[in-house]
Length: 272
Image 1 (cartoon, one colour):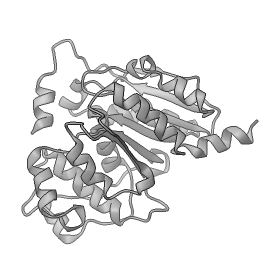
Image 2 (cartoon, helix red, strand yellow; image 1 turned 180 degrees about the vertical axis):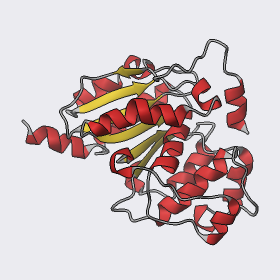
Image 3 (cartoon, rainbow, N blue to C red; image 1 turned 60 degrees about the horizontal axis):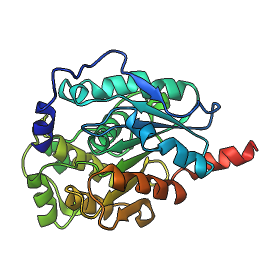
């Protein structure tokens, strides 16, 4: 329900142009190298990533990353067209150019990244019977060009207090299943159902998930729950960090320095 409140606050000035506007934060990499689609938070725009030096940090660390920011404002989510526009206007053009594609989402953008993966990434794992009754479903899309190599989630919103409390009472994702069918608009439970299937999928073929957040973030409880399901090397927590760019920008540097995009570094060194 928390997401509904945020989206209900969309102003009349927010539009959903087709195609979705994208901003090239760095110059395009050669075909076969890495591209990163950046999804902004609730009150941010595509240009925000460049304003906070995401490109400079990648360059400082010697990473040949093509950074493309999608201007996915709240209105795209409210009108339920964000995934279609993200696919058509950002992901597929990069895939068709032969790029490895990752999605980096900040706050609301983290929701978008997970929703995209839920609908457009084939895990090769069917929902359990209990999960299917609750409303989970397998994906079925053109994964040959539609797949993503990984997700980087910066302080994602992972559902309202009720679903987070359910997960806490179940002592984590492994033992949690909704006790009744999940409404179509209950995105929080649908995301956690997809994460249960991701948890069971082959680690060699499923998309990587990296998580970073501040321990004073208002979404920290949900983020901690997710962190327990991930490779500890893929989790970065900023002590005292909040839900703000003063936390996310240093975390972006930590993510890059930790080897999140080492496949991109390898392609750069090979071409040197």
